[in-house]
Amino acid sequence: MSNHVRVNATYRFEPVLIDICSPAHNTSLVKQGDIVRVINLHGAPKANTMGHCYIQTLAGELIDMVCTNSLVRK
Image 1 (cartoon, rainbow, N blue to C red):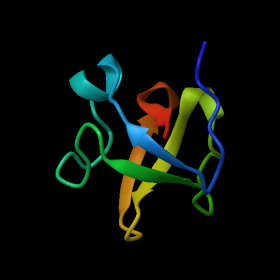
Image 2: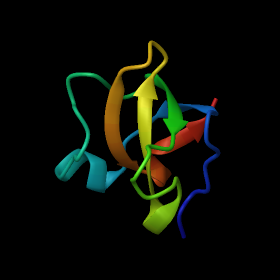
Image 3: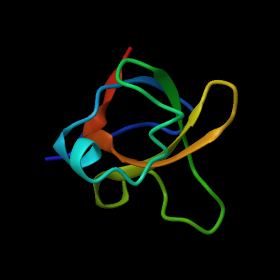
Image 4: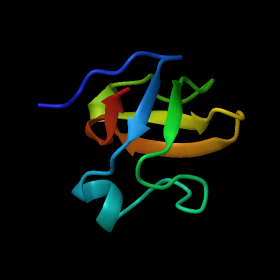
């Protein structure tokens, strides 16, 4: 069962196995414990589709797609 996240909410990034072994995200922009914001991108699947979502740094830099289970409510 996947974790349900809300768009524009902030979460702590705690990567689960899929985001550790096969990351789709830019690993230079986010590390374990970083605070990130969930976003929806125009033309891309909405947050929570198949247990994934797009995230960005609090400065607004796109990180990319991660598993929703890797996001922990602050």
